[in-house]
Length: 214
Image (cartoon, rainbow, N blue to C red; front, side, top):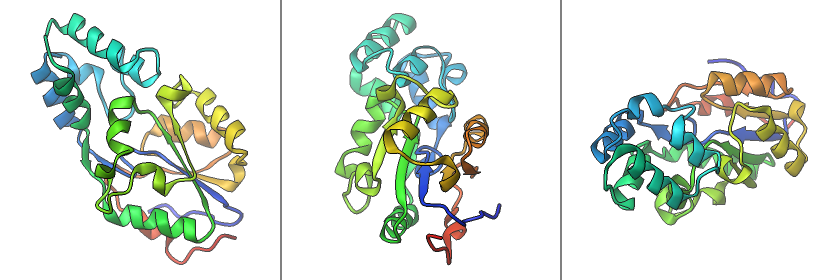
Protein backbone atom coordinates (compact mmCIF):
# COMPACT_ATOMS: atom_id res chain seq x y z
CA UNK A 1 0.00 0.00 0.00
CA UNK A 2 1.31 3.40 -1.03
CA UNK A 3 2.48 5.64 1.81
CA UNK A 4 1.05 9.14 2.11
CA UNK A 5 3.02 12.22 3.14
CA UNK A 6 0.51 13.68 5.58
CA UNK A 7 2.41 16.85 6.41
CA UNK A 8 0.19 19.87 5.74
CA UNK A 9 -2.85 17.93 4.53
CA UNK A 10 -6.06 19.67 5.62
CA UNK A 11 -8.58 18.36 3.10
CA UNK A 12 -9.47 14.98 1.60
CA UNK A 13 -11.43 14.58 -1.63
CA UNK A 14 -13.02 11.18 -2.18
CA UNK A 15 -14.51 9.58 -5.25
CA UNK A 16 -17.75 7.68 -4.61
CA UNK A 17 -17.94 4.53 -6.75
CA UNK A 18 -15.03 2.15 -6.24
CA UNK A 19 -13.81 4.16 -3.25
CA UNK A 20 -16.61 4.71 -0.73
CA UNK A 21 -18.97 2.28 -2.46
CA UNK A 22 -17.86 -1.08 -3.84
CA UNK A 23 -19.00 -1.32 -7.47
CA UNK A 24 -20.34 -4.23 -9.49
CA UNK A 25 -20.19 -3.18 -13.12
CA UNK A 26 -21.05 -6.69 -14.31
CA UNK A 27 -24.39 -6.55 -12.50
CA UNK A 28 -25.14 -3.11 -13.96
CA UNK A 29 -24.36 -4.37 -17.47
CA UNK A 30 -26.54 -7.46 -16.92
CA UNK A 31 -29.52 -5.37 -15.79
CA UNK A 32 -29.18 -2.87 -18.64
CA UNK A 33 -28.97 -5.70 -21.16
CA UNK A 34 -32.15 -7.18 -19.73
CA UNK A 35 -33.72 -3.73 -20.06
CA UNK A 36 -32.85 -3.73 -23.77
CA UNK A 37 -29.38 -2.18 -24.06
CA UNK A 38 -27.54 -4.98 -25.85
CA UNK A 39 -24.37 -2.87 -26.13
CA UNK A 40 -24.32 -2.03 -22.41
CA UNK A 41 -20.83 -3.50 -21.94
CA UNK A 42 -19.42 -1.01 -24.46
CA UNK A 43 -21.27 1.97 -22.97
CA UNK A 44 -20.70 1.38 -19.26
CA UNK A 45 -17.69 0.96 -17.02
CA UNK A 46 -16.63 1.81 -13.49
CA UNK A 47 -14.70 4.95 -14.44
CA UNK A 48 -16.31 6.71 -17.40
CA UNK A 49 -19.54 6.19 -19.32
CA UNK A 50 -20.27 6.65 -23.01
CA UNK A 51 -23.18 7.69 -25.21
CA UNK A 52 -26.42 8.61 -23.48
CA UNK A 53 -25.05 7.23 -20.21
CA UNK A 54 -22.27 9.83 -20.30
CA UNK A 55 -24.79 12.52 -21.31
CA UNK A 56 -26.76 11.83 -18.12
CA UNK A 57 -23.64 12.06 -15.94
CA UNK A 58 -22.59 15.29 -17.68
CA UNK A 59 -26.02 16.80 -17.10
CA UNK A 60 -26.70 17.14 -20.84
CA UNK A 61 -29.74 14.91 -20.42
CA UNK A 62 -32.24 15.14 -17.58
CA UNK A 63 -33.43 11.95 -15.94
CA UNK A 64 -36.65 11.99 -17.97
CA UNK A 65 -34.75 12.74 -21.20
CA UNK A 66 -32.46 9.80 -20.47
CA UNK A 67 -35.43 7.45 -20.13
CA UNK A 68 -36.76 8.67 -23.49
CA UNK A 69 -33.36 8.38 -25.17
CA UNK A 70 -32.84 4.89 -23.72
CA UNK A 71 -36.15 3.67 -25.11
CA UNK A 72 -35.48 5.27 -28.50
CA UNK A 73 -31.97 3.83 -28.84
CA UNK A 74 -32.86 0.34 -27.62
CA UNK A 75 -36.38 0.00 -28.99
CA UNK A 76 -37.35 -1.22 -25.53
CA UNK A 77 -40.45 -0.06 -23.62
CA UNK A 78 -38.50 -0.30 -20.33
CA UNK A 79 -40.10 1.53 -17.42
CA UNK A 80 -38.26 4.15 -15.35
CA UNK A 81 -38.05 1.61 -12.53
CA UNK A 82 -36.36 -0.98 -14.76
CA UNK A 83 -33.91 1.59 -16.14
CA UNK A 84 -33.13 2.90 -12.65
CA UNK A 85 -32.46 -0.66 -11.51
CA UNK A 86 -29.71 -0.82 -14.13
CA UNK A 87 -27.88 2.13 -12.61
CA UNK A 88 -28.38 0.80 -9.09
CA UNK A 89 -26.83 -2.49 -10.17
CA UNK A 90 -23.48 -0.73 -9.81
CA UNK A 91 -24.06 -0.32 -6.07
CA UNK A 92 -22.74 -3.53 -4.53
CA UNK A 93 -21.90 -2.46 -0.98
CA UNK A 94 -21.32 0.57 1.25
CA UNK A 95 -18.78 -0.76 3.78
CA UNK A 96 -19.48 0.50 7.28
CA UNK A 97 -15.76 0.70 8.02
CA UNK A 98 -15.41 3.47 5.42
CA UNK A 99 -18.32 5.45 6.82
CA UNK A 100 -16.77 5.22 10.27
CA UNK A 101 -13.51 6.46 8.78
CA UNK A 102 -15.26 9.50 7.30
CA UNK A 103 -16.82 10.32 10.66
CA UNK A 104 -13.46 9.94 12.39
CA UNK A 105 -11.64 12.14 9.89
CA UNK A 106 -14.15 14.96 10.30
CA UNK A 107 -13.88 14.66 14.08
CA UNK A 108 -10.11 15.04 13.71
CA UNK A 109 -10.51 18.31 11.81
CA UNK A 110 -10.14 17.32 8.18
CA UNK A 111 -12.48 18.89 5.65
CA UNK A 112 -14.01 16.20 3.47
CA UNK A 113 -15.34 16.59 -0.07
CA UNK A 114 -16.82 14.20 -2.61
CA UNK A 115 -16.03 14.58 -6.33
CA UNK A 116 -18.00 12.06 -8.33
CA UNK A 117 -19.03 11.25 -11.88
CA UNK A 118 -22.61 10.31 -11.10
CA UNK A 119 -26.23 10.92 -12.00
CA UNK A 120 -29.59 11.77 -10.40
CA UNK A 121 -30.69 8.12 -10.24
CA UNK A 122 -27.77 7.04 -8.10
CA UNK A 123 -27.88 10.21 -6.03
CA UNK A 124 -31.58 9.81 -5.23
CA UNK A 125 -30.58 6.57 -3.49
CA UNK A 126 -27.33 7.95 -2.02
CA UNK A 127 -29.06 10.98 -0.51
CA UNK A 128 -31.69 8.84 1.17
CA UNK A 129 -31.56 6.93 4.49
CA UNK A 130 -31.11 3.74 2.43
CA UNK A 131 -27.50 4.73 1.74
CA UNK A 132 -26.04 3.56 5.05
CA UNK A 133 -26.67 1.05 7.82
CA UNK A 134 -27.00 4.05 10.15
CA UNK A 135 -29.82 5.42 7.97
CA UNK A 136 -27.74 8.51 7.19
CA UNK A 137 -27.56 9.95 3.66
CA UNK A 138 -24.28 10.44 1.84
CA UNK A 139 -24.12 14.18 2.46
CA UNK A 140 -24.10 13.59 6.24
CA UNK A 141 -20.50 12.41 5.91
CA UNK A 142 -19.05 15.29 3.87
CA UNK A 143 -18.61 19.05 4.03
CA UNK A 144 -19.80 19.29 0.42
CA UNK A 145 -20.60 17.08 -2.57
CA UNK A 146 -19.40 17.95 -6.07
CA UNK A 147 -21.48 15.96 -8.57
CA UNK A 148 -20.79 15.77 -12.29
CA UNK A 149 -24.39 16.07 -13.51
CA UNK A 150 -24.85 19.25 -11.47
CA UNK A 151 -21.49 20.71 -12.53
CA UNK A 152 -22.04 19.88 -16.23
CA UNK A 153 -18.65 18.20 -16.61
CA UNK A 154 -16.97 14.94 -15.65
CA UNK A 155 -13.60 13.71 -14.47
CA UNK A 156 -10.89 13.58 -15.72
CA UNK A 157 -11.59 16.99 -17.30
CA UNK A 158 -9.60 19.62 -15.43
CA UNK A 159 -12.67 21.89 -15.49
CA UNK A 160 -14.51 19.88 -12.82
CA UNK A 161 -11.49 20.00 -10.52
CA UNK A 162 -11.09 23.74 -11.00
CA UNK A 163 -14.77 24.36 -10.29
CA UNK A 164 -14.44 22.42 -7.04
CA UNK A 165 -11.28 24.31 -6.08
CA UNK A 166 -12.87 27.67 -6.79
CA UNK A 167 -16.04 26.87 -4.85
CA UNK A 168 -14.43 25.21 -1.82
CA UNK A 169 -11.33 27.37 -1.54
CA UNK A 170 -9.18 24.31 -0.94
CA UNK A 171 -5.50 24.37 -1.85
CA UNK A 172 -4.49 21.30 -3.90
CA UNK A 173 -1.11 20.93 -2.18
CA UNK A 174 -2.97 20.67 1.13
CA UNK A 175 -5.41 18.09 -0.23
CA UNK A 176 -5.36 14.32 -0.64
CA UNK A 177 -7.41 13.10 -3.64
CA UNK A 178 -8.54 9.46 -3.54
CA UNK A 179 -9.97 7.99 -6.75
CA UNK A 180 -9.88 4.53 -8.35
CA UNK A 181 -9.61 5.87 -11.93
CA UNK A 182 -6.06 6.22 -13.24
CA UNK A 183 -6.91 9.12 -15.58
CA UNK A 184 -8.63 10.95 -12.71
CA UNK A 185 -5.67 10.44 -10.41
CA UNK A 186 -3.27 11.59 -13.11
CA UNK A 187 -5.25 14.81 -13.61
CA UNK A 188 -5.42 15.39 -9.87
CA UNK A 189 -1.66 15.02 -9.63
CA UNK A 190 -1.14 17.45 -12.53
CA UNK A 191 -3.22 20.02 -10.67
CA UNK A 192 -1.11 19.68 -7.53
CA UNK A 193 -3.13 17.28 -5.40
CA UNK A 194 -1.53 14.52 -3.42
CA UNK A 195 -3.16 11.31 -4.62
CA UNK A 196 -3.97 7.74 -3.77
CA UNK A 197 -5.51 5.22 -6.20
CA UNK A 198 -7.22 2.25 -4.53
CA UNK A 199 -8.65 -0.69 -6.41
CA UNK A 200 -12.42 -1.17 -6.36
CA UNK A 201 -13.52 -2.30 -2.91
CA UNK A 202 -10.09 -1.92 -1.32
CA UNK A 203 -9.98 -1.36 2.43
CA UNK A 204 -7.67 1.66 2.43
CA UNK A 205 -8.42 2.60 6.04
CA UNK A 206 -4.88 1.61 7.18
CA UNK A 207 -3.65 4.69 5.29
CA UNK A 208 -5.18 6.80 8.03
CA UNK A 209 -3.99 4.93 11.10
CA UNK A 210 -2.14 7.09 13.59
CA UNK A 211 -2.36 10.16 11.40
CA UNK A 212 -2.85 13.68 12.71
CA UNK A 213 -3.79 16.92 11.01
CA UNK A 214 -0.26 18.24 10.60
